[in-house]
Length: 104
Image (cartoon, rainbow, N blue to C red):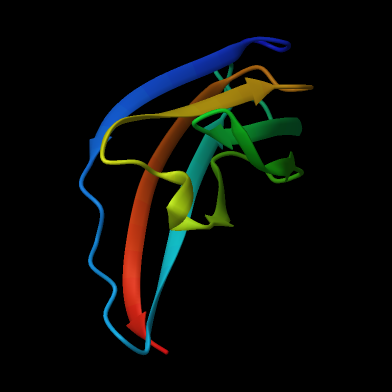
């Protein structure tokens, strides 16, 4: 991703079933790294389906891993999107999205 640019990825989602007394939690895990093999510093903003879910401050040497929790109700059945904007960051980004149902 280039500084000031947004990278958008779409994915398909089938909602999880939450039973009585259970709660669902979404986690978006992000790994960032510098393309040039230099220390990775800066920040990115993260949104799901156009709704901001957080800003990640990158202050680590590469690769740096972060997690952003979100309300799974932001996801809809079918096609969804994750948007990552490099506010003060240029480099590689990988993410994994997971929704887990836990007893309340």
